[in-house]
Amino acid sequence: MDDAAAPDSGDLILARLAQLRAADLPVHGGRTMAYVYDSGLPGLDGLAARAQAAFAGVNGLDMTAFPSVVTLENDVVRQAARLLGGGPATAGTFTSGGTESCLLAVLTAREHARRTRGVDAPEIVLPQTAHAAFHKAAALFGLTPVTVPVDPRTFRMRPQDVAAAVTARTALVVASAPSYAHGVVDPVPDVAAAAAERDVLCHVDACIGGWYLGHRRLAAGIAAPPPFDLSVPGVSSLSVDLHKYGYTPKGASVLLFRDAELRRHGWFAHASWPGYPVVNATLQGTKSAGPLAAAWAVLQHVGTGGYVELARRVHEATALLVDGIAAVDGLRVLGEPDASLVAVAADDPGTDPFVVADEMRLRGWYLQPQPAHAGSPANLHLTVTAAVADPARIAELLAELAAAVPRARALGPATVDPGVAEVAAALDPATIGPAEVALALEVAGVGADGALPQRMAPVLAVLQALPAPLTERLLPEVVSRLYTP
Ligand SMILES: Cc1ncc(COP(=O)(O)O)c(C=O)c1O
Image (cartoon, rainbow, N blue to C red; front, side, top):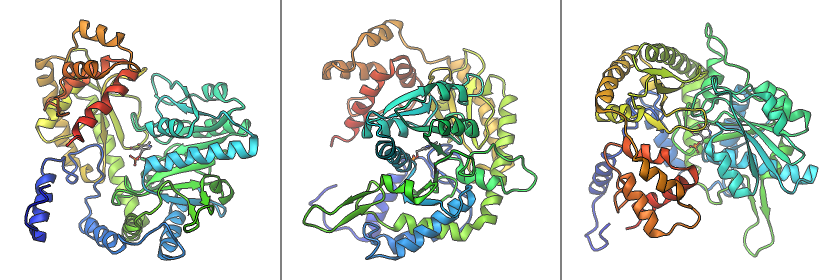
């Protein structure tokens, strides 16, 4: 921004923002099949924006000064608890998103294990498919992740692996409902029972699918999802994001606990300083009540009946998509999705899913590349939201995919020079310096300013060929280049 420029009028400033947005993926219309959740309901975003603006300056830091936040949060938590198997004792916290809900679930479990069982070197047992947020929590809060494999065909965790992994040091067992990468629900009753047998807490990560599955369960004539919520014996907490299938503005998630006694272990209180007494239920201090007010307004407006109808449409569209992909020569769906997330892999080595993604992007569709990991081959992630849930739109998507596959075959898979892969594999991510980082990024096709090429398949092929610790060393360097003015 040019500080010396004359002050712009509001219109000019907003025009500049609109110009910047033009380079982003669209957030409406259903063609961006990750990151965004579009209800397609007319007027909903406008209502949310007005509610958000009305509460933007309200500070959720002090609920005694702003009692409106207590009423709004209690309403939202009550609605989530009612939907997701809560009872009279269920307590909850409104958070800024899935990651914060997962972080708080882990922090709460760590403190609970320390205070009630004297665990001082805590571990967290989680499936290979658990969201990265749990590894972030383990890193931030000093827990050791104990990762259990998933069934290579169904991508669900196996209860016997959980039972074998739980020790006296385990603070928390995590199951997904569903997992982000494959959209499958772990066997929550068996996993929770294995945890409860050892007196260990069990968190269900229903961040992405909980709101959708809970409402789908209420739709007549549709097969019920597998049991996954707080009504399952042994489940002690559950996270559900409103800014996903609740279609609320970003910054909205709920973390439910079996009772307020468990919830208190994650709270922070401090009175030993000269300022105001602090009680934080979340990781933030000052927090705008805007996202809470917007979420409350959207929940009121759509209502249970509205969400059930949206869930029915998403369910039907997902079934059409899954069947349609099975009929596209060269593509297959991984596992059997329980929710509205579909992972699409290639059937033959001549079709590179990442080249398919590039082809689709050139035609206005964003499908999210998921690199190969453990038993999961390279694939494309598709989140089906209400905006894409229309048979004509699904038919259009399938036709684009069917046309993209032969083009991808003709272009051939993105490959990595074996020599480069060998040299890269020998690098020690803990000790490499700026020169090696620069060289590795150049090989991957990343510009000196962090700019990425339009076709991402070659970059992804390199990243996929590198050992994960090296990729984890390089990715922040790419992002750091972007944020260096
Ligand atoms: C299963 C699951 N857990 C946690 C998260 C993290 O949520 P957020 O991106 O809102 O922080 C996601 C995000 O997609 C998710 O799918």
